[in-house]
Image (cartoon, rainbow, N blue to C red; front, top):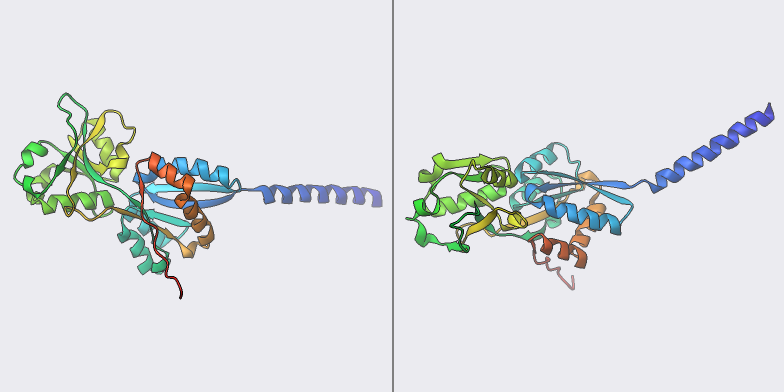
Length: 271
């Protein structure tokens, strides 16, 4: 009887040690909420980061930056938030999920008007205020853009429309989309004749080209920002990922996907 109990005890201990060993090797999941424009970049970053940090598994949730911020306000489950406009990282700071000092500029991008490639495709032109009276020649049909209430690319686009005095003339021809990638898809499908997207969105997209960009001042400078979410309890994991993104490998990936790294914030010395 004692021998049987001993054998059971030994087997139990062995199984327990195996279970503990498997737990020690389990990959730690780190959730990131990111604007839809970063989807392709995120896939490449994940492959590189998980190779560098095999104990980490990155999980992503993509969508309009404004919608993601509202979701995080209700349930701060993500370690890191990547927004296509500082408005939404600042919003979460105002709600107490992190501090203002946690916000970090990460990417600079460029707003363009995309069209389908055709016989009349021409090199990209820069629109200025001088073309305000040439609306029909530039936008003869329907225009897709992200809903400016939640989609930063749509907000930047709306600033252009307002600054050129086109708001009243274009409102009936605007197709508001869930995010910038949906706006691009609306163009691809033929439902729209042009779309406001980021230049990085067009990288590797056969059949589309950037027809126009904009002179300085027609919209805010496009700045993507990152915010580790303190309320998630995983700020160290978020900061480690950001350090990798700003490192040599991370910068190379960003460049491959048409993203320009924002200047790193200067730290005060001697304090």
